[in-house]
Length: 587
Image (cartoon, rainbow, N blue to C red; front, side, top):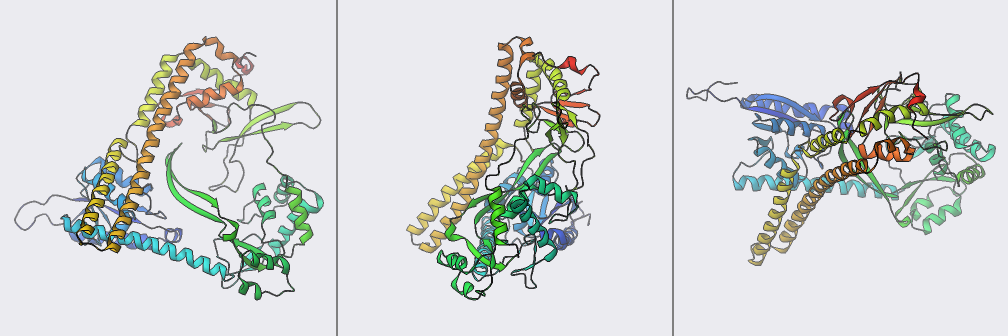
């Protein structure tokens, strides 16, 4: 990097963050696009004499949301100060929503940081900002156009009688060479036929089917060992396995769910399965949540059923499973409901209160009987004890007796609850932590930014209308500009609603704190020892209790939602005692 600017004066070091993002899982796996972006950014930074502070990538992340691990890291570094520029290859790598560009730019400017992209066409002048704004709107238009073209292309393909290929076809089928329909996978289909026979002819329960397949080592569709009852149930209900005769195909045509041309191509002497498309409207959104290991990111999908007249039926090869066997299996599970696993008791630590200390997963409950003996034991056990989970099963395979674990936890918690002042201090600290700036930034400051953005929308709306009234803008141009403003307004409204939800959560925490403390003051301390299991669990939920159970029976207890490793409230390690019965609550 040059040390002078040509006049003998020492040049200040400009620290830059290089940011790259790809939006599809395929790009994220290949890594090519990320590597290309970073290489181009490195060359530009070297040419301009920037000092690279950090290279940050967001593989497989959508630009339609700011809730991305890489972008959170960028915002953290900018907030810490000392960053001159955040550099991306294209403006849409930062975000595809112009409103999000506005928020990031304003946030970065407060810390003396600029947003730059290699495809910037403007500068910091009003004209330059206008040029970049046009580019942002064009990128958004291109994304919407691509999504709409993809959607319409899939609909057209399905109406023409073609399957829309996904990562994996239904179990028992493979894709054909052109990946627009199925071919029967004989070995897998024999497993499918066996499932139908066990349910419809033998009268086997869903749970017995699951255990039989696992005991015999039959691999699941994804190659794992453990079968799920939900998959077996959905397999039975899937029309792709059910043979449809000519009359049933004609009925689909009459309802408008299959094109006449598609039905006419089918051999009337053969039965066909039906693969359904366009049955649900899916809206996917990425959100961040505070977990036991800090911030985690997940995609949340909302499925909304569409009217049956919008469904598209695609004929596929018959599975070969007899129709009467399929009908019998469906009848056998028609009244099937998920059995209760509470064993006739109330579990104080269920619902995520008791967690495995090794992997952080919730502990599941189970009830065990010994043959014809009336003795019944109830246990807590890590949910991740089986193989088939990502990164393998948890090594904590110990089952913990509920009648020992529950009194152990309550003995400690009730003792702490008998000191309300200390409890108030703990809860106050947790609320302050939740209220303070987080990974998203200062909520109050962001609310002001979005409110300012809304006001700017209204100002610009008035100017556009004045320009139209003065014949400086055509009606189509006015409609286009107003549509852009409406999208920005919706985004700002959404973000303000999210910030309001945050404030409501703080208010809820404060109400829960007051309920806890008022209730403790209203009753004698010894009354805590006579609470029922349901009442204890209510206390645990108000306190946001967490009990991390180790294989040796050691329990780490914390409350107000903080993990033991970074607890803001009191954390205790309690060990089971040989005289555990003395810790049981009074009847």
